[in-house]
Each structure stands twice: as structure tokens, then as C-alpha cells.
Length: 604
Image 1 (tube, rainbow, N blue to C red):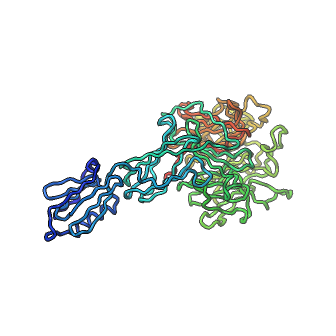
Image 2: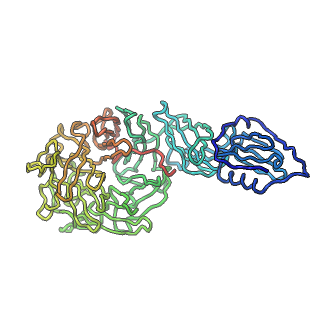
Image 3: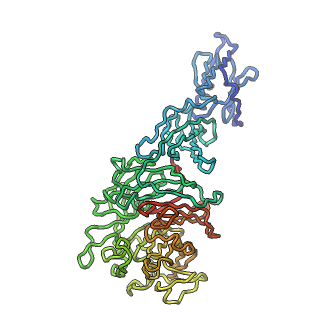
């Protein structure tokens, strides 16, 4: 017996397996001998998921050409070889009568499809689950073909490597014969073969489904991915209906949670986000809990806030230690006059135990008496009140500290011990106690702005303006943030009286903790005027691959089909719009936030 296992290039000689080939050795019963080393070496290769590509002969040996090398076995050790290409296997019968089945390159891969289930959870009609049985260890690459070529095509290499897999298929078009390729690859993603299935979907029959229109798309300059829209439903008290829409304006994923017994009352608000492991986290304002669910809409876990003494509103983020940071209302909290106050607490929740780690009362950090009497024009839902003095709408971390935005007070940073670090806000109406924490504005050259009207917010310059009614601050570094400046009553003037001059912005600020200054580094939105004005909600995002900025005014924005929101991707170097999409809704509220991401989580 002569055998070697070498790291040689793979051979693609699958034509040798188009028929049944029986190769008989010349040995007789009296001279057979099968080495244990032969069997064990072959078994090790099989156990490692390596595929046999072909077999050839060389003198008195068979040469087994595997994907990553060759094995030579004396013909005297083998009685016969039977390739069965239709199921990608080759059976070897040794001279001692024992047999071994070896996964082998074959023909059609259609046999791997065992079952296809559309909408397996009942809540995601644009998703399917495909049961496959692979010839050996490997991965499955899913490709959902676009309607118009490669623009709408979605491809994902699944992470599972076992022969039996439940393969998730996301990105199906509604009311369409979807062509889906399933490629069988090795563990490193190199393709071995492909089969195609067709998945027929029905139309989306959904009340208050938004109308979507893409008005610009420079595909070669855009961030890859899909637009994840946090749609609250027909109203702020409706069941939320998150969906993903591609760059052609096609809805490719949606959760119809009203049908779910576990999530049928979920009101997500702005808390919805996807975790690194691919699950979705959201806050439920109706049942006062945090929920975790998968991409199909199956509830995985929940955390009860009510038994801790809180109710949820607005936002959740994951701290560096893995715990949740959550904006909450503490029902027992009172104003000095005994009246209740709302939306002015933040808590840290231990995700493992569900226990409370820390509580921050914003009334102990900033001035709860800083209050501007409603102008009588702005609707009460968007006006400050003594009870809703702060309206904390976001929380995250910046360096070792926390970062929070408050609709009526500005943007603040404070330590985990609750010590105030700085405030980005017009200096007007702040009491003496808080003036040392107010960041002073500087111009584009870093020089202090001395105009008191600009400092107090009564005026602005091209070089600097404050954020009015801000939402969704995003940490870029320890000294830089990106924020959605809604323009709520900008310069203390009611929006209803400044209709033609209203605008929202995305703005980048640079903070100097030593000099206690703030500099406006970059902004976009003023040039769009009322066309992108959103008095509330909305979000921004720095896109990691291109460095582009996503600017998403989400409520009351005029569109060609009514009102709602816009999703705008901007090249920050040129301020050129490379993508724009209008979303129109009957309620005029299109979304709380929009983020760009891959449709498939990397973990799947």
C-alpha cells in the first residue's frame, strides 16, 4: 500500500461522475490487505468536510483528488468504487468487504432541498425557511435575485456549517415569483455547486402601508445595505410595523406584529435596533417591557420594567459592558409642587439578571426649573410643560461618560456617578449654577463667538447654530458627536410663525472638554428649508463603509404624495445627495428613525 495526503490544488473533473463507474481491482481473496491507516486517513478527510472531486489511476494505484489535496491508495486495497453523482456520494468497498461513503462532487444539487416554508412565524410574509441536507459539512450562500438585475439582488453567506441546516431566506419581493439561488460552499465560502428554487409570495395586504418613492440613487456612491425603517404604525398608539426597503423603493422585509400573541401590542417607539448577534431589541410602551425577537418576529426574551418601578419611552442602547441604557419615566417622581413629572429618568439594566444596576434622575443633573411657557401656537404634544420639562429622547455613551439629548433642554454629558460634564444648549434661561457647564460656541477657526445673540440662541451664523429640539445624538469619538437638529422653535420663534424659514439639520459638533467650547464642524439641511423640516422624531447616522451621512427627517415632511419623511444620503465632502427617498403616510408620521444595514445579520 502506498498513500500520501498532499496540499495540492483542487481538480474540477466532475465529468468522471456522470455515470455509474465500477472499478474492479485485480486482487484475489487470498492476497487482500487493507491498511487501518488507509481507512483512518479517508475517514479523517470525510470528517473534516472535504469533498472528493474525482478519481484517476496511476500504475497500480487509485488517486483520489480531494478539494485540498490527493490521496493515493493501492488498487489491491479496493474491491470496487461506485460513484452516485445524483446524491454527491461515492461508495468505496475495500478488499476486506468493509465499505465507506465519501461525499463527492456530483451533478444537480436539487436533492438538498427538503422543505420550503414561506412566512414560518406568521408575521413576516417576505421571509422563508428552507430545510437543506448537504452532502457534507459546508455553508449555504443565499441569493435572492433582484427584479431589475443586480441592483435589487441580495446575497448572504450563512454561518452554519452542519450538513442539516434551516436556511433563512430574507428579501423576498411581495406578490412575485422570487428566484432564489442556494449555493453549497466549503467552510471558507468557496462554491461547490448551486441550485435554484422559486418562492411565490402574495401581495402585502396591510392597512396604512406607507407609499415609497425613490427620487435619486447614485448606486456606485451609496452605502451598501438596506434601509431599516422604524415605522410606528398608523398612529403613535398603534402596533409598530418595522420594515426594510431597498434602494429601488421595494419593501423586502416587514413584521406584521398585530398577528403575534406575544408582540401584538408592542409599541416600539424609537427603541428598536439590531444587536451584533442579529436579534432585534425594542421597548414596549404598552406592556412596559423590553423585548428581544428574531428576524422572523419570534419573541426570544423580555425584561419587565414595571416591576422595577418604571415605564418605557423613546430609547434603548447597549452600554460598553453589555447592559441596557434605557430612557424611562418613574411614576412616583414628583415636581416640587407635588405634580408628576415624566421622561426624565435613565436606568441601566443588567441584561443577564433583569435587575436594576443604576438610576439617573435628570432633575438632579440639570435644571428642571428651566421652562419656557408654551407659545400657544405649537400643538401641546410638541410643547414643553412643567411635567414634561426635559423630554429625554435618547441615551448612549461617549467615552467613559453618558450622552443624552433632551428635546427642551439640549444635549448633555454626565458621568456614571451622575456628575454633569457639559451642556450643548443656548445659554439663555440657564441659572448661575449651570453656567460653568455650558459649552461656549467657537467659529470655524476656533475663535470664541462673542455675539451674545448667537450665544443665547436669538440668532445664528453660517459658522454656528445650536440644536433645537434635538434627537438621536451619535458618538463619533470622545470629542465629536452627530445629532439631528429638528429646528423646534429655532431662535425661540414659534415654528407656526416662521413656516417659510423652518428647517431641520444634521450637524456635527466638536467638543473641547478643557476649553469648554463647542464647534460646528459640518451641517446639512438649512439649504433644503421646509422641504426637510421635521418638528419631532427623526435620526442621523454615519455610514461606516463610505463615510456618507444619513439624514432622516421623519414627521410632517412634505412629499410628492402628501407628507411623511425623507431618507437622504449625503456625501459630506461635497454635500451632494447620492440617495433620496420619500415616504408618505396617512398619519404624516413616517418613522422614528431609519438606519442603513445589511438585510442579513452577519451572525446568521
